Length: 120
Picture (cartoon, rainbow, N blue to C red):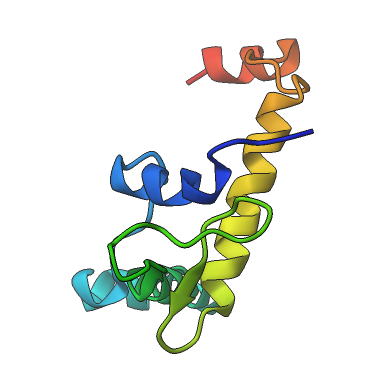
């Protein structure tokens, strides 16, 4: 199974705001963050670090500015500094897209949940 265009899918999704990132923890009022559980604070800081790592990603190009490809036709990337969270984020996004494409996701609300929503 081939997935053309997937090497650029994450960048395109970020550029067009198809992937929602929370605001940076430094941009939130301290009194708001202080009231959160430590786990939630850690998740926010981890997601912020992932975004920062994405900013350090660049596509390899040759002397003429063309993108450098691998033998299998994928773009080559490089990153300054750490890239562990960025890699995990790209794999999660790809897994999510594959899951959607598999057709196992059916939009709708289960009957037992519909009753709960009508109470609100």
